[in-house]
Length: 446
Image (cartoon, rainbow, N blue to C red; front, side):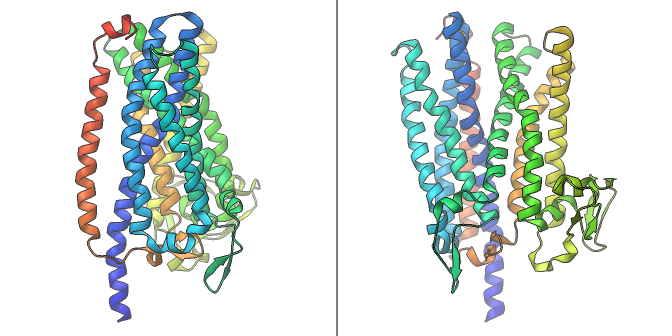
């Protein structure tokens, strides 16, 4: 009977995990634009207020239309995620809902605030005084930021549970604020919010770099490209500092995740920082990596001689899939390094020539950085979520203990994939139609 139950849990885990991963991966892209695009809209409209140049107003207006499409689709995909927490992982919310419910509630308020002012902002073009209209965009940017903060604090609690005592398997003495502001929340929230600005900046810049390569509407595309790229490049050095902070937090709160990220099997002092490499679970070593002696010890504990615990010191049933976590981490760091190189090159070029690089190879690199920024963000979430396995609440509840035992999960997953495919195609089609609107709209400020 026990073996049958275990087999049933195993059967349920794969489709539930796949559905959660797919829907989260889809929604998080839209969420990034929900955080970053209002900032671009506000800056472009502010430039119109300062200069009276209606090209800036048209740029803000077009971005607001794109925001409306992404916000509507994001509202749907975010609602799906909310239902999935209860439907796919009923034991998680059943046991821990009282502990982690506050940030989800606050996110709901932030979403409604964003929706209300998004409606006012979109309807208010030509109906409100220009400066009043600009101010109505601020609550959109602020509430989008707060939505990200609240949701990520809930996720950070799953990585570093706090704000309760466990008595007879049930949480008591619950402190919702302590749960929200847990040991991991500061670094994880900052890391995600900055990533949202990077994804928005690089993705929008990628689109307008293509426009410049085709020499269409040069001035319009040049302004849009410059503004979007500036948003991204400003946050590149910030993310490097936040990444270092995040690594130190993970070393303190989830040492097994750190070991998986770096493919660190042996506990040792002067642990090396690995670039690349393929973890081999059979031989308990990471092959073909470039190793920097003491690098991991220093990045984790600010001490080249610090001891870093390896995967061999943890029970096998408590360790995540090392190859997946290590590869995802290497992808994230590798793309982050490319961002840093682009930022450094732009800074050097501006210091020398007082201008942005305009070469074709630079524009093509900007085109590539759009999808790469999204890939880096997705890889970061793989590190966060897969690196916590086999726990859904680290150290307290396993994912296998939280999964639903209701039948039909594979059917729901297949149906969800089909629906999301339709939604994805419709979203891309709508955005392409907006992007291909006649340039007469630009010159007349429509």
